[in-house]
Amino acid sequence: MTTTKNDAPSSADPRPQGVRALIQKLEPHANKIAIANVIAQIGIIVTGGLVRLTGSGLGCSTWPMCEPGQFTPVFHEEVTYHPFIEFGNRTLTGVLTVIAILLVLAVAFDRTRTPAMRRMAWLPLALVALQAVIGGITVLVDLHPAIVAGHMAISILLVAVSALIQYRLSTTPRTSVATHPAWLGQATWILFSLLIPVSIMGVIVTGSGPHSGDTEVGYRLEFDPMSISKIHALFVWFFVIMLIIVGVGMVLARRAGALITRAQLNGFGWVLAVTLAQGAVGYYQTYNGLPIFVVLAHMLGAGLLTLVTVRFLALMTEPVSSRVS
Image (tube, rainbow, N blue to C red):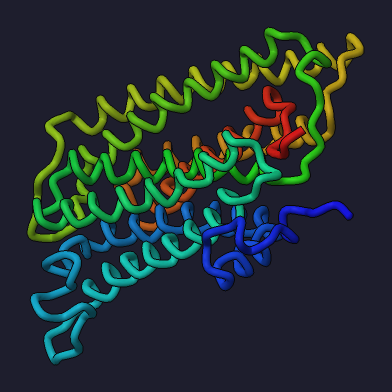
């Protein structure tokens, strides 16, 4: 009789029986957990943006407590909505931590996964922990824009990592990269590379603008917002041009007989749609006084653009499975 990994004698596994049982229950749901992780990572970009845009960044005056001696906001006659918005964002960090732990349990100990996949499962948990520390530092330094910018940049990185993990755990059909011209995969890498300066310049634009995160704190990066916005827009146009090159390349390759799958075409379509929407929102907010909810929509779009671009890159360049061959 053969012995599967789930039937192995308990003496061979030093982990408590309850932990082993939990891991075995979670492993079949790894992809669902990864999807929840992606959604939550984008969600905290939105709630973090809401904190900044409503001036609630110092709604809780300290960290990890909300107020000295109080973990949660306290109701009183003069209380405003700011502490509850800030505390809500902190609470979502707790949700992210739980999801990241579940992802580790579902993937990192599954020996049918590749070693690279098992190691990668730890990244969201490590980065969420780092984010919690940076979030605390942000409060303690009165929302210094450089620290806030780093906080946002790591959130974008978390979305990228989480999107790649979810793709690798998914059942999306893989095709050999040899089925389309090599330059097309390389062009997709360039497209993804251009997303990095787009995101960085977007963070700098936000750090130079009027939304500091608190009505009594005016620290901003010492850049002219309009000049930085134009540099940001320049990189966006580079991204758009590269996206057009990739799209035309996919059409030509398909006409020449290369196998361009429906999933790859859909992936390109999602990147194109989100890019166009982001561009429209970006120009509108720049020339209409940066309305709060338009800026918030642009921050949501930044997370979504990262998600769809990473997924498209994986579709075009990653034929491998996360399972051990």
